[in-house]
Length: 330
Ligand code: AMP
Ligand code: TRP
Image 1: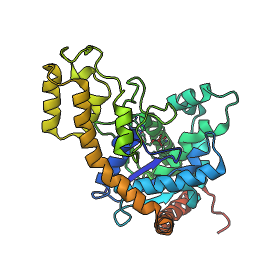
Image 2 (image 1 turned 180 degrees about the vertical axis):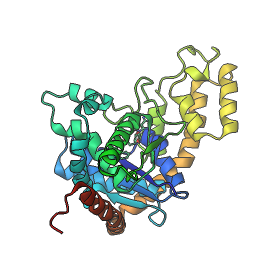
Image 3 (image 1 turned 90 degrees about the vertical axis):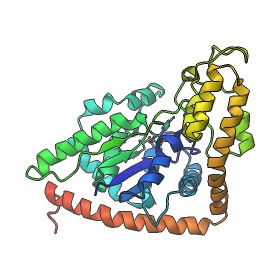
C-alpha cells in the first residue's frame, strides 16, 4: 500500500492556496493510504523568525489542519521538531546530495537573491525535505506545483543512497508528487502565485465578511470594462479559478455562460463565488474556533502524533545507520 507524506511550514496563516493546492487533497488521501502530515518547523527557521512567533504559529497551523479535516484517527499529524530523527537523516543525506542540484533549485535562487548574506539553511532546505519523506518510506507526496523540483531532488538522494548503500534491493522508494487541478492558485492581484510573503492571500479562517472585502476589489477579465462587455472566463485569473475550486459544476457552467453572454457583471459573479466559498469554509472556521478554545486537546493530539511518527522514524534510522556502517558501537 503506497504511503503518503507531506509537510507544511508554520510560517503564517494557512491560506486558500495551501488549502486547495495541498491540504484538501491530504484530507481526501488520509482515507485511502497510510498517511503522515508534518508541520515543518525545522524548515521554518531557515527564514526570518522569532521564537515566540514560531511557537504560536506552529500551534495555529495544527489547529488549521485539524479544522480542515485531518483526522488523527486516520493519519499521523505531528510537529517535525518532536521527531529528531528528521535532522539526523538530513545530515546522513548530506554526503549524497550534489551541491549543484541544491544551487539550481528555483526556490533557493529566489530566496537567496533577497538576502545580503545567504545562510546554509536555505541551500540545504531540500535535503531536510528528502529526509522528511524518506524517513517514512513515502511513495506519494501531495503538494502544490512549486514543490515538484524539490521532489526531483528527493528522488536523486533516494537513488544515490540505494546505489551506494543498498545496491541489491533498493531501501528507499523514489517519491512522486501528487498534484491536483488546483496546483497553482493565483493571488488576489491576479499576477503571482498566492503567497503569504506577497500579501495576496485569503486566509482559510477569515470570516465571510473579511473574504468579501478581499474578493470585491480582486482583478477580473480585463476585457470586461462594463457589464455589457462579453467576457472570457479563461482570462479571469482569480475569480474563475476559485469558482472551479469551490462552486459545483452546474454553477461553474452557469458562470461561464453568463460571463460570455454579458448577462452577469463581475460583482454578480463574485457574489455567487462568495456564497460557495463561505459554504465550504465556514464549518472549517467554526471547528478551528472550537479547537482554539481547547489547547490541551490539541497538545495531546500532537504528542500522540509525534509518538506514532517516531516509532516509524526510529526503525528507519536504525536501518540507515546499519547500512552506512554507523553502528559500530552496538
Ligand atoms: P508552504 O506554505 O510553502 O509550506 O506550502 C504548503 C503547501 O501548499 C505546499 O504543498 C505548496 O506547494 C502548497 N501551495 C502553496 N502556495 C500555493 C498556491 N498558491 N497554489 C497551490 N498550492 C500552493
Ligand atoms: N518545502 C515545503 C513547502 O515549502 C514544505 C515541506 C517540507 C514538505 N518537507 C516536506 C512538503 C515534505 C512535502 C514533503 O511547502
